[in-house]
Image (cartoon, rainbow, N blue to C red):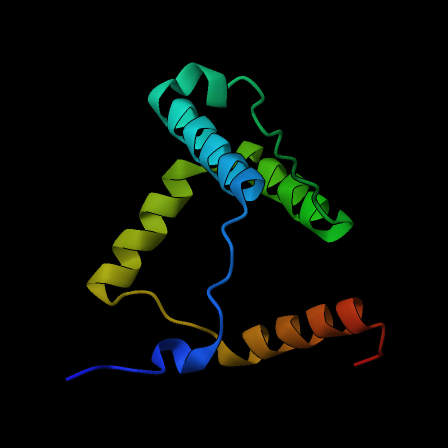
Length: 110
């Protein structure tokens, strides 16, 4: 049995020795860089970060908050009252304070 018309009868493409040599050289260079990490680390990339103005403001607020003085005695007293169920909230006073804060933030009159 004979097989005819292999590759659809088209002639075999000639090998481009110059291109083959370039590909082998590139492959050898890649292998050399992987084998010697000092060469590949010779030019490290420089990363950079930039913060938006709102992120910078938030950072400043967080710093100020962590530096603010805390009356630990008062905090402990309130925690104890809440845990024991003795702490009560004056709903009317709380509502007035929330309304005043919103007016201050949004610039409206309550």
